[in-house]
Amino acid sequence: MKLPTLLAAALMLAACGKATTPETTPTETAAEPTVQSAGTLNVYSARHYDSDKLMYDAFEKDSGIRIRFREAGAPELIETMKAEGDASPADVIIASDAGTLFRFQDAGFTQGIQSDALEAAIPAHFREPAGNWFGLAKRARIIVYDPARLQPEDVDQYADLADGKLHGEICMRSSSNIYNLSLMGEFIGRWGSDEAAGWARNVVANFARQPQGGDTTQIQSIAAGECSAALVNHYYWVRLSTGTVEDKATAAKTMLSFPEQDGVGTHVNVTAAAVAAHAPNKDNAVKFIEWLATPEGQRMLTTETKEFPMVAGVPLPEGLSALPEFKQSEFPLEQLGKNQNEAQEIYDRAGWN
Image (tube, rainbow, N blue to C red; front, side, top):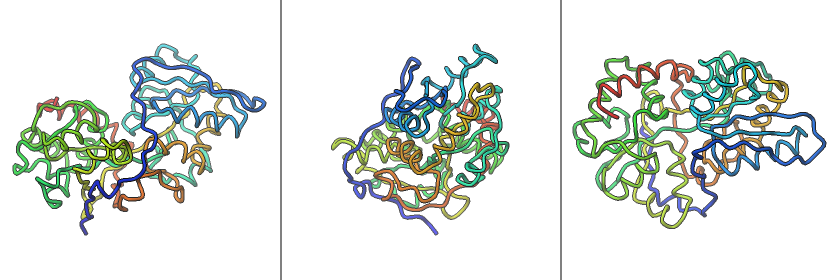
């Protein structure tokens, strides 16, 4: 059964807080202690949202554990941990995309843990099999398109983006972005390398312009008439649809397709947390990740980002309730990182850039 696509105008909801722009320099600070200290916790986060400070404050209030956090891009955090070696103070690593968590794990910076609470709250598909990381929020990689130029059936499969009928119609961001690498990682696993490479070549042949910007840029380009379809993570569109008057007007010119509803389902990835390999406060690290899987932790983790909460029964952030239920791919997330080097090679050979 094909999933109906959505008019952006259906999501004209009240504006809410927008995500901040990623920092260009690392930020390191401590949340304000509110109760007698029950120890400390050092969080290394590749997220950059104002609401995360409130999240840390709430955990401190609930637990008495004082949090110090460092925010930077994932590559910077990995380099920092390399330099710190066994003496790294990191207790918890938070990052988006299973492919990013793989990079921390592959570098030896995570450790497997066992937690009955996390195993009960988080479906097995969304946690690393040995407990090296636990998915805490979900993001779908979908197709956004111009309904004035395309019909829903034109973009109900990822393969449609490689169809010659879309020549000159496709906008994309860089292939080096982890979202595109992980999507290709699933294609390699499902289709095989040759078919995945053919898809990349044909998508490049359909480009309206060279890759540029982020996911929001692709939506804006479609609204401006520069192209008619692109891949984005769902929450970028939801943020626009619940944002300023201008943002809402941009989203209203587009529609969404959740691909592969007749088959394996839409590619879904995670924001996840891991206990650092040399965590000096391991018990507190586990307590914090378990707290993030509680209703309060889930609410604070996803309200600003517009990701889907991981834990069943948690209310959806504003704007998500208007999206349809959809079939989700169950491709093993731990495989995405293992395939990312080949994914980049495929994109490079295709001339994606």
